[in-house]
Length: 370
Image 1 (cartoon, rainbow, N blue to C red):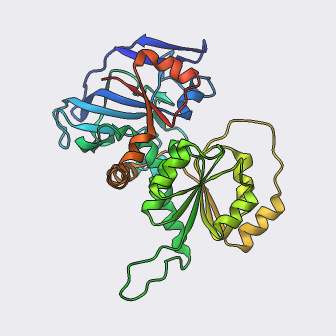
Image 2: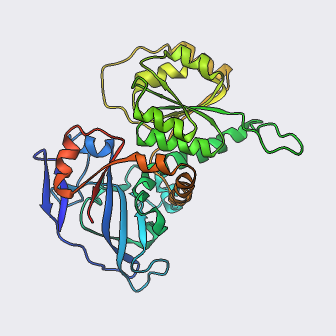
Image 3: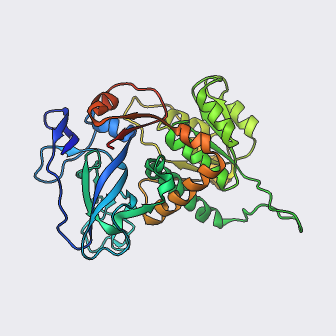
């Protein structure tokens, strides 16, 4: 079967003939792949910044944002049937008995670092025609989300981040005032850094959670991403046209910064305008560049004197996938045009190498295998 693979030892990216997998255990499910999203991680893997083949293989089949259709099930499978649509999780647990996170099914918090990830580290990914995996890693998707369900995996980043946000802010009185006889009024303000797919899905998630949401991104207005922000009820601010200091004045009292651009210089600059009791969430992983100058004394004073919290989040557990499927359906109900606009290009697998190694405009590009 066809697959897109990287060969780290020879620094090659190829369309290859990869062996078709077969079910070998009662709890396994075979999928025909439908869509595989392309993200920054994939582009970094094809430039050989990281990406590890499975043991004994010279290549790694890439792709971790997926949608597949069930075509065969093992004898012990109970929750899926032929014809079902599923999104499959990415990370698999380490084997260390003392890793309490992995033993609890929360390999997204693995302590040892010996986890594997499909399409990234030690396991072949989804940019191929057929995949076999265990039932427990698959998440059922309603048929009416078929055209956008490939967005589930990138949406899990925001789902996990926001769940932790509410847990963290349980440390203080953070609920918005409620007047008798009136619906709840939301009082928190969030700034999203970056208007790529992770940033825009994060903005939708924060809006759904009741945050007044701003998206701070480089492109000057007018532009299509600014229009998309307006369509969902977020406010777009260009970093080319508005300084960080002015951003702080415009928003006023930033409660949450959701970083989704992987630009450390911008992120640490925006930390200066994070509000009292605020939370800064990192989701991006910057490449190694020259050192930047940071006023560490100012930042440390603010962290302490303003009760601020900073945390990073990566990968996602089962509940984040279930929440993402539910929320994606709600996004579609509220903002059907905006959700559809997130997927800006669909390409055949024969075009995938150009898509991965070239510069293709758009928000989310997808390799469609059917």
